[in-house]
Image 1 (cartoon, each protein chain N blue to C red):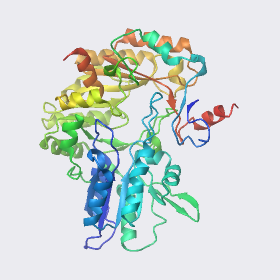
Image 2: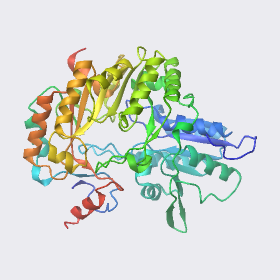
Image 3: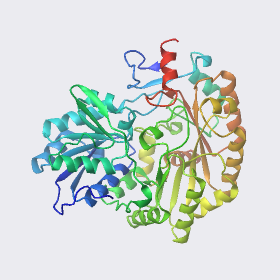
Image 4: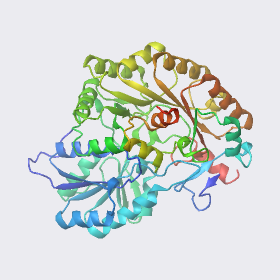
Length: 400
Length: 84
């Protein structure tokens, strides 16, 4: 990590907060990575993980009775559950936590996280807060905290969203070169508890997605440029998780096999280090270009199953959704996985623009014919700001 | 459009698009097409709690993990369904 200042002194304590209480629990990977960056820059850190808290107000009161902090960073992973049926608005629950934080501390409260990055100004306005970081936080949060510690102006910090004179301003994000970061220790979050209660650990091998899917928010927060971690660093981190007893993992990349060569390099490193027989991992992947030979390599590296975001089984719908593969690819990929013993899940996103009863019927018939192990049938496209088709959806709502 | 349609110009609160060509009961039509095929999961409990792959507060999953299941949530649900 780049050093933010040259002072050898401790810079103060930053409290990292996870307000997400969804169950089964998913480890807040971002907080582990942020903690690593802050510690590397001589900050003390505490993590207040409210996922397992039964009385949040009491937890906060108890913490702030014993601690003074320089700043509080709150990671908002989900804006909502993206379910057309339940429409669970997570931000409302986060706001309750933030209101409790405000009652306990006068330290600056900084919002961030993938859910926050989709619509930072709206969330800050709703929570009545003045500081946030959109995009990734390892560089920006360290720099912001350093400026706060030194009582210096911070309005030029990359990725900073701030309110000044009643108006929001958002600085362009600056993305990390992931090939140069040191390997995160993964010791700040109680990963073992998440494994026991959530069934798996998690890790990233890269960030960013160059694809143009019309509904997706991943490129909004992580950028469109692919930034790859070194296979050696990923393998070190996997070994650290294995040493904690975490042998089932999810690789959190948008699509693990984009680019394919990086996926191959990661797998070869895992095999080379003899980790493939000890790990069982799952991932998201593109259904294009998964040959039997590639599936065999995944399998040797410990891949147990792949969730393919296929969206539709109808070529004209795939084009409508901005996908770059065809129904033929779906069939070949399912075959390759089946032959290599990798369990496949095909995720559908139904009801989007141009969907008809005929295209829906075609999709379901295609899935039954191709026969992946499981098919997830999700109806309704959550419209998020900053996505490729947001302007079109806005016009549709106005009846234009 | 479904969900928070009015007073939500920036799409802040949950709002969903479902093609009007699917009619007023798109979920019902989807269920009819799937016709009880065991390989399909849904984003609701309508087809049974073990077919619900919305992982938000999913007690079937949470209980399975407590009982020792490990792995991706969808694969745990698959194994529960197959009794393995």
